[in-house]
Picture (cartoon, rainbow, N blue to C red):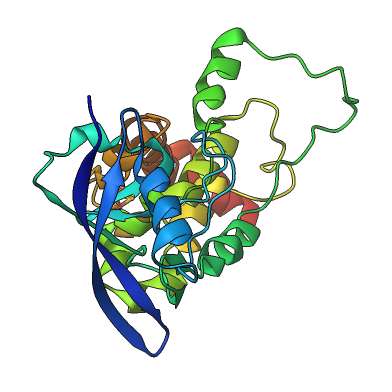
Length: 254
Ligand code: F3S
C-alpha cells in the first residue's frame, strides 16, 4: 500500500468547551490511528494532548472514540477505514475532558476502591493455595483486563446518565466482583461479606440489563457479560431466593 493523505477530525478543547478541528495528514502502510495522532503532534499541532504509553494494546492508556466507537488508538489500524473516509477522533464521552483527547478517568479508580479486596483464607500461607485448574482458567479470563475503561465508557447506564454514576460501578468492577465471588479461596463469606449481595446493593448490578455493549468493545475479547455479569446475577438471585439461605438468615437474626 502506498502512502496517501487521510482526512481527520480531532476534538480540541478543554473543560470550558471545544470542537472538531480538520486535518489532512499522511498515512503510511501498517500505521494505526495513534501513529497519525503522533504525526499531527509532530507536524501540525504540537500541543495536541493525548494519553498513551505502550503502543502495544497492553497499558490501556490511549482509549478514545473513533467515529463514535470506543477504541484503543494504538490497536486501530488505518487499513480498516476507506481512504476517502473522514476519521473522527474524540475523547471518551462518559468521563470529563481534561484537554483534547485526555479525559479524567478518576471515576474508575474511585469505583475500584469500593470493591473489597480478596480475603485470604485463614491458616493457608502464601504458596500453599491450591485450586482446581478450571477455577484458575475461569478467573484468568477476567485478569486479562488492561483497564482501558472502554467498557465503562460505552455502557449506556452511565454514558448518557451522569446521575447513575454514584450507584453503578460499571462492567469493569462488576466483573471484579464476579471474579472474587467465583474464587474458591476467597474467604469474604467467613468475614461476613456476601459479594453477590454487595454487587446488588452497593455496586448497582441491577442497573445492568445485559446489553453486552461492554463485551463488544473489550480489546482483550473478555466475555464480560456472559462470563462475569450474568453468572454474578444468577448467583446473587439464587442466594436471595434459596430457602435454605433464607432460613439460615432468619435463624441468624435470632
Ligand atoms: Fe452495561 Fe455491559 Fe450491562 S454495557 S448494561 S454492564 S452488559
